[in-house]
Figure 1: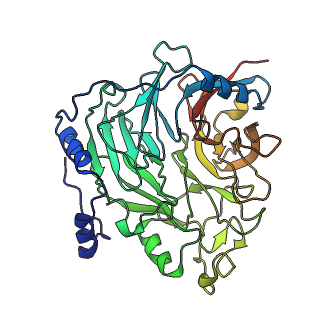
Figure 2: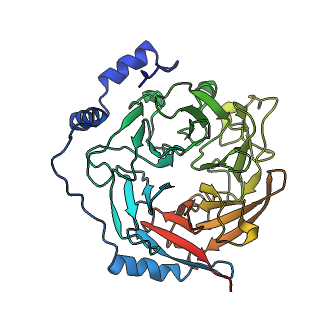
Figure 3: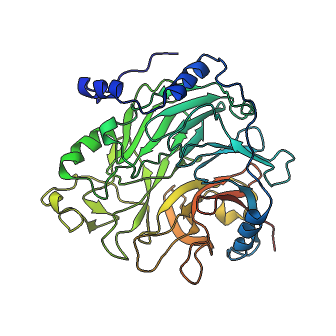
Length: 430
């Protein structure tokens, strides 16, 4: 493996800080060094399973009776998965890996191929993950896990996940995805996709409601508040793909034209109905999407009460408007292009989007799955609600969708970090 190059932002001062700051317990760091050398890191081969039956599973199924879908569609519990966030469906087996915002990546397996998971257990428990939200695959079956400030690559994960020790490649070591001084508890969930050329795309949310004036240029340079791409195996060839983004927690690549799309959550504290969320399409590397100057198509933010110190700062001469404006504060997160054959023709080629649900509204909104159809030229067409009902009549969340993922049979999985579950949506002609 080629040595990982030192990023341009890793100054002598920052490097010294990295050496002085131990963000991983010594045992965890020892374990990853052993696993990189294909050595045993633990002698306990037993991994506890998450219960898939009982009162909790029954209650989740009961809540699903509230969910409304178009005619012919049905939804059921696929797996009980605590804190379930982003999903990566395995290339060759009936299993998937599920990220969380805590310290666990879950391995979820349907061993008897009946459309319901039989087994949920932690993946690579001899390692210590930190906010391993983003999971995705290379074309040849390597699992990528993107943490808050580290990227790991696991060869043949779907076949070698049974024990606690797994082979691992440290693509970006701890503390080198972003400068450690920019680490924050806020907006630290990364998402990822690998393009056909083998480049790993990673979203990097900026950690403020609106970044202060002195951070704007720095973040645009580093790709914080945007998206970067880098080699999926050694972290080389790092490049900023998108700038001017607030907090993207979802992306996918259109299989038809290979364009990269991403969701973006916008500023809090501006009112119930502004600003809109965004669905964006990358048309060229390095383009700017307007933030923190402009929201959506034309809503100004620089100089408002939400960003008074940005007064007088002008947006770039050219910035890219969103493909879709979502209703304000619904928190659209994971997204997936649908290329299956189970669902009717109108859904094929379109995008499903999970809306986590608002916190910054007097009346809650969201907690649903939306669908965006595509035009013949590859741009977005219409937005519609596909599944709703996780927000009940009293304004109480019964669930909060995070991500959507297509199974090989064309069914659609929906993760829910509030209920701690994954649902499976299927279609049968009425």
